[in-house]
Image (tube, rainbow, N blue to C red; front, side, top):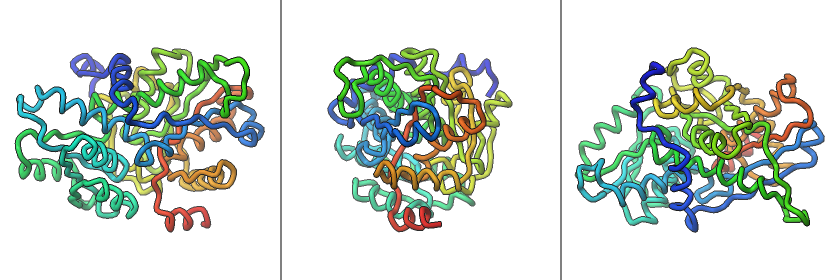
Length: 353
């Protein structure tokens, strides 16, 4: 997409993030920020970890999913004025669960297109939330084409809500950043132990990158509330399309990357997410699957949390930039854990490898 094209896009704004925060209030969890003295001593920084693995359905995706489904209930203009009759999406797992759960809570049917090799836990959870699953082969079929075929079989009033390239999905995901920054502006410690609140401004905020929905929304919030914070995206080394896209100034398409970070097995950014990222994201770094496994172990052993591989991208990126000297000692660094949905058998295999 050429740079000029961004002017013609209906991009979300920070006001949309604020509206989304009202939409999900009392529905989504206000997830905690955790700290680790051991991690801070090891890296020489002060870290603050936003735990979206403790969100409803186990990932940040619930925020954007609920915001988007709720939007179509209240605004049918994009549906030709026809009342919302159902929701269609495609996802490797977490967005699938988010849409299925959100639709169920709002009494709307959902149809979810999932790769046949999606983690069994995510398939089972999507079904348990009421999603009607249609499978496809992510290595031989284009999911956009599959979605178009499926939508033709669904009734009028069906809204298609993609995993990341959607105004209201991005707005909902941005509430992660808004929540985190506002909590740190009145920080009393993990357990509220500080007598007087401290206002903490992050130097860096590390966010995983798949299609860019989470980092785009967080960047909108950070730009409004903490403009000096550098937003750092982290991708799997095997799938660095976002890194290439920002370096080349255009959306780069790649083959489906083979990585354990199944939530980041995207082939390209969206036009909305790219337009926001190229303006507000400072840098994209990549990490290996081995580094993700190391941080799965760290979260499990030291912080007593089960975190899926994609959820470890942020911390792995922080470690990499500290090691390279790009993040100075004493920096205040935020890390977003995106989710914790991983099959326990697979989890045990990975941390034992």
